[in-house]
Length: 204
Image (cartoon, rainbow, N blue to C red; front, side, top):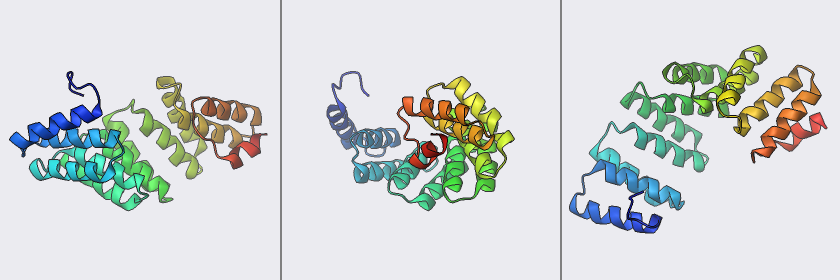
């Protein structure tokens, strides 16, 4: 946020004034979209990101943000397509590959998830979200021993990352260690992560 803006509304007003004088500035449109997201003004954010892309078609971050808006609406395929566009616009950007991996996981396709998550981790080996999602993908595929190193690394980098603790709970449950699974799920809940009730019942 601009240093002289006291809140998001002031920042939005400043960006709108700047765009009135320079309507083709992709960065201002993008920043305005991010500000609208902070206020959960989804339609306005979407319009701003589209304007950013109209003026800078290879702005990968704008595609990623549009994918996030799709995900918020429950449109997994839309999210997947926008992140595919982002990866084409900026092939070395890890985020869209991680997001595509997440989308494929939501679609029940762990094999494609793993392919994309490997691409994300090749570009950024310490990308916590990609590491945790890779753990999920391997668990869904039944490759539990491949999941654990990714979850270990995610928790080493981000000990408060709830999804990784949840997945580690799944790992230990599969290994038959209910006590360790319960400990991991408790850690997940401590971070604010909502562990599925059915999973909690399995370790109670």
